[in-house]
Each structure stands twice: as C-alpha cells, then as structure tokens.
Image (cartoon, rainbow, N blue to C red):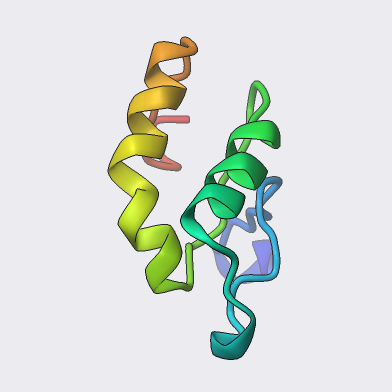
Length: 75
C-alpha cells in the first residue's frame, strides 16, 4: 500500500457487531465499548443499529473521560 501512496490504519477497538441476529442489548454494547477504550484507540466503524443508538451517549462519556476525537490526518 505504501508503495502506491496509501497509508494503512487498523482499528484497536471493535467487537463482532455485524451479525443482525446476534445483536447485543444497548447496555451490553455500551459496556463493551466503554470498557475497551484506551489512549490511542481507533474505533472500527460501528456496523449495527444498536451501536448507532448509543453513539451519542458513548462519545459523550468518552469525552467526559478525557478522550478527544480527530480525523486520521489530524492524529
């Protein structure tokens, strides 16, 4: 990828959320994602409607914990 001008990035924060028939509850998803945050974390795209429904609350909580957000270019 580097040879043709691309940069590669891998996420460090994710869980299996793409199976529509195996979605965790909002509480379970929040607990998983909150417990896995760490300095320098890159969160994978959230694939489920469960994650979409908790995203605002989750980002707010992470901000309260002192985390900030930016684009890959900024980071």
